[in-house]
Length: 318
Ligand code: AMP
Image (cartoon, rainbow, N blue to C red):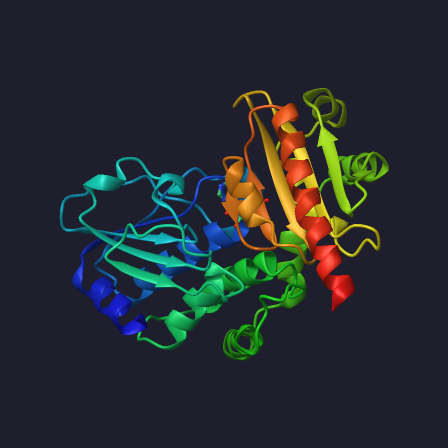
């Protein structure tokens, strides 16, 4: 599979690299690292990393303005399982497409589909791709890949971390000698206003009978803490390892898009099937959804509570 991807990269002179809407560090890092590696390996190719960025992740790298494309352009999509979530305009005009993703399969929309749903991150797959082909790497690219790996595995805390995850981290660290501390500073340093918001969220977390903790953040609260609707989603991973909570959810009012931004995390129950019912999806233990109203979001909580109840029952019987 990696050879197939490398040969396709070698063949095309213009390559566009996209990833999912609602940019996050792994999605962005995977497309930027792949772009930079292709540029380093093939100096004459035109390679663009596209999509809407976020100033919050500007330390990962900058995106490109798309140049001229034609039917001989290759599109590579990283970290995205379905066509509708690719952050690019006019995806159907691309006649040649490659997918490199670690989400559970949703749909086939590319000629080459490299799906490794046991990988911790899209960056882990790109690390393996570079390591096993003639694609080149340097310290900067290695750092970018490590950022995505660290972010999507939540600092190597998730079960998605396999022996391969650690051995790739070790391989890149050994060969490119970057500072782990410097990277973590970049990824985890955050404004005091988000810490204050976290305090509010913890204080107002509502716990269901079966261990679902949900935190509702209205637009009024966002204004009060001077943060935007992405902030609660940035904080959600900090609510891991609470004794009484096995599934936890942020529900944030997004006035601009007339929806509720929901992030869900789990320490056991499978949550992505519930997320899919509410205009969402994702991984078994980390998903997102976009219900239209708080009322609809509360239905999602009820569904999660059922899943948690079932999980608790099964655990008791084990
Ligand atoms: P988040 O809570 O936004 O960090 O998302 C966690 C995971 O769920 C990521 O892998 C996202 O790609 C995925 N995800 C988030 N929102 C959606 C959505 N509306 N539809 C499908 N997948 C989503």
